[in-house]
Amino acid sequence: MLLGLGACVGSEPESEIDPLFEALAERGAPLDSVDDFDEDAYLEALEAEYADLEASAAGQDDEPISPFAEFGSRIQVYDSGFIAKTFHFPLGTGEKALQLLRDYGGLNVHAVFDKENSTPPEHPQAPDAVVLHLLEGFDKEAFSAPRSQNLDPPTPIPLADVLIVTAMPGPLRRIQDFVHTFISDVRQIEIEAKIVEVSTRRSLDYGIRPIDDATPIFGLPNAGSLVNSVDFSFGNTVEASEAIFKVASVFDGVEFNALLELVAQREEVSIISRPKVAVREGARAEVRTTKKIPFFKVSAINASGNFTTNLDFVDVGVQMYVIPRVIGRDTIILNIDVEASQQTGTAVALTQGSEDNTSVVTVPEISKRRTTTTVRLEPGQAIILGGLITERKLERERKIPFLGDIPLLGNLFRNSFTESRQTNVLFFIRPRILQGFDLNAEGF
Image (cartoon, rainbow, N blue to C red):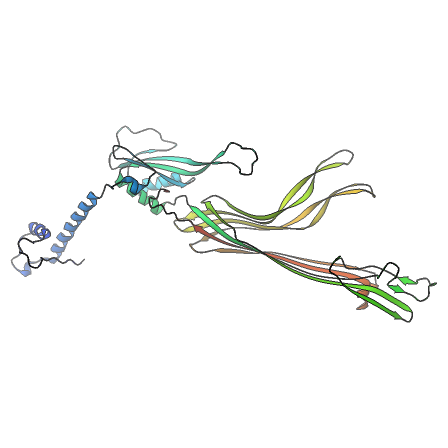
């Protein structure tokens, strides 16, 4: 610390002597020479004098101009000068916050009220003492289902623990600083997600079928022989957008007429959604991009074998559930559960009836890909969840035995269908703590 002391130019030295010099002169004997000057003692006395001045200034500013300007509008000011202020903590952490205040807050605790102690003290509260009153689960929210057709009574849902502190401005200021530094409050968190779903489908379908019903594929020259024609139909399974080749030839009286059908398909679908939702700390954020697949559900079967069905639906698509929690001031813990599902086929659940009239009840086959994880993210960080890949290959072949196995020529006696499907889902999740603009910090 470097200090400089001096007098103003153009003034009489006797009238402009610094009061600090006078105070220092009173503390020790006058100096006869420079050698008698003790620098350490001088600096020690100077620091003590400035400490007294700072303490005096702090005492003048102890009382704010308005307690509402410093502690917020949600306080109660009593005629005695005591102030009551509420502090909100995440549900289930109020008792721990109270214990931290009592152990490390450096407070003169006059009384503590909680679920175990509700007896008021006998002596009145001193100006430097504080009263702590913990109400666990006091902050509640009335919840009603928005989709309910009936206006049901709301259900109270506990959201936070409340601590009511009654103290003078000085101790209350220390408690507010302690809570702000060491104990996290209930905050809002914005969950920004980007869901990318990419589907690829490739197929090749080819087959042989007759030109018409009257013309066989193979016609032999001798109509009276044991075998005078060979006919079959192994056309492809596509009904539209076909490539058709008419093939006709004659080999030594053997006539060949057929239609060659070839279809190759390639599809690529990319679905990108960017949901954004704000949620309170410890609550659940839900993002769903699904479609409902209908099916008949068997509800009852009688003794005669007759059954009754009800129309039901199953959700298929992408679903994401996130529960955020804040550790300290900036670190976010995310509990993530993501699921991607799709229909891969149908299964017969029940059949009924005769050969001429048969009732079949089918249910969809659903394939699901799901992952759950817990991650810790610092400010500005994001997480990418991938690997939810589904790959499905299908090969189907119909042929005439033996003839369809002949190399090269066997393609004229068989039908082949191959299909490859691949679906990949990626989740990009970025959380952000919403910062408030209330300088009075009423959300403590």
